[in-house]
Image (cartoon, rainbow, N blue to C red; front, side, top):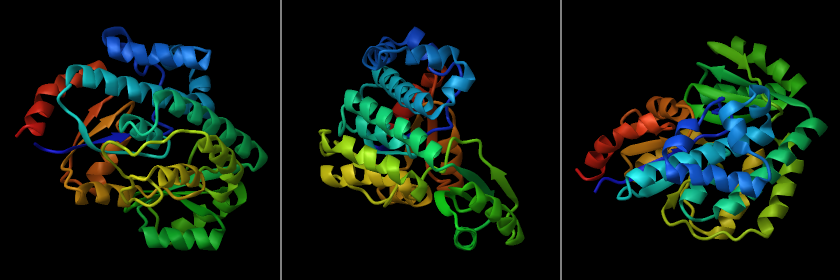
Length: 312
């Protein structure tokens, strides 16, 4: 049997209307939204399906919406494909919480609670310590590290060998952009984000998430789990707890994460949730890994192909 990895997106994947067809056509997917609405005390499903976009893009709602929609997509997928089980899970930033929920390391209820704390504390930290982020394209990682050192910003995401995201104070990002261009970057794109995520400016948020994690029951994952901070498989609950908090102020090592996925013998992955960002990153980092996307009911038409792949 071919071993399949499941990948889960992070903030930025959201769009108005996401998951609506899952809610309407999948009983298992609908239950995820209904459970989330009940636990949250407001309708995250309505925000997903109807917006407005200005509300959906807020850190608090975006993170919750992406997690819930990704879980709904997973349950809809599992409803149609009960024989396919993940051999490995990984998620980009926020997506780690989804990955751990699917791996049965964290309960859905606890993940939802932790994400609320995470998002609220990130918004608060961003308000206290205003910052910015920029995506650098076409510049190798070591050159980007030089840019960070010279400008005073930090590496937030290592997405592909030629796409790195910088994070820091607004002034440091303003300094970084021309430095990156001078070093040969093809493009430097300021990002429309609410703060300097994955940088030391998120330290207050990290501390609050650490406190919330102390009272959270975490089990050993039932499949392999690759975290962003180390990009090395981890199964110990205390280590997972520590890394979930550290992630807020650490670089997302996505290039190394995908290398670890490949080294574990995973040749097929399913990107589970809204958007197709991760599919694109896999193609650039590990093009030999075959990737399917499941973010809508129409994507479940791939089930026959997936069955054939999982049982060659």
